[in-house]
Image 1 (cartoon, helix red, strand yellow):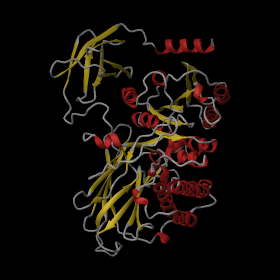
Image 2: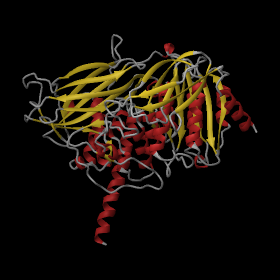
Image 3: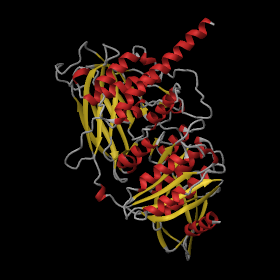
Length: 587
């Protein structure tokens, strides 16, 4: 009865306020064809509406005069001043870039990419995007490469879950850039109010003496939490039957209760739960009522199916109703990703989140569980929702994501962040970006473009390149030329895009002489390549990984010490797998 009552209150709360004017019109293209699902953003109320099947719309508005923005993927947006008593005939012109709806977006751009085929992995009912590894590129023919930056770190904790289960890891679950950046290594805080600071390091490649490794280190500024604007958090929690396991709903309840401890009185929390039905479990509540919020979380129980699509709609509606202008507005979705009712395909979820992202509410996704875990769906939601994605395999990871690294996870300092690197072909013969691999469907679509990511407060991103030099020894004494030039592009609060330029010097040092954390990143990179079963890992063996990790890990750091244990476990799993294959061949 409580759920029904709160759901009715929620429905009433989101109904449009009484209005005395009715704004009407239709939206068509240049050929006079109606355009359905065009976005109509009403500036006075900050509400988003959509045109109907025949391009028409009718909106209750409180004022005779107003303004709105009309947009649709593939068309040029229009900003209009309108009068409510006049019929609007709106014509959208085709965009010059002719962007198509829902096309897959690249996270890196490379050339001459060979789409190598391999066996597609299935693990129970889990799903992962099939990835295509970046290849070596001829720097003379293709000196430019670009990739997007984000703070996703889900792959490492998911990999850890498989290894702790004594199971090989599906190759497509291994995203090397997320594994390296899980540790937030080699942070150098930007000075003088800058948003970013860029460093680089050239070193030897331990698995190929002819190659070099180039580390690009991008550091984001730290936000002073005492000056952070109020936050409007909507917890969207999956309480369906599939969540009734210790590593699912109970883990999420513990995670959110940890999160609540850091709330300020100016912050607001709401809870939408979905399992069989969708309802508002907790109305907007001040952060100083921690006991009330934690009690509400503790009372959640798992039952029913998973109406994920309608739940996401409800969470966005609630976030809109409590929207804080200039604040941090965010929906935090926590689920195993098993949306078995409503719109289930990645494309349909793309549609849903794309419609909602422009209202200024970000989306963070927290994944849990095993067996039916939908990594691909949560990636889709987080990327389309201008947010980030983490996987919680235990309560320690929950504390890391939602307490220790709260600002990195929740508070963005820059959006649409991507980097272009132009290599110097006089010094670099070939290069390969390690990680930042693209989905197979994005690579196959020649119209795909690069999509920037979101960077959180105090976050450091390491990008690793394998480089084949034009000279046998690429060092700091080769004509003092730069190896490459970098252009980092980003935006803040939807302002005009900004650019940072950085020249990559020839600062070569042997691996044993570079910063300890960068050497540790090398060990993590090799580990990722090995368990991914990469074709570029032929010369990487477990003794090399172990030796590099042992020589660089900070054993006083829990996560780095745990990595040493993970490497040891993985070496036994993959050694056993190889033995089983040999025995099978003799049978």
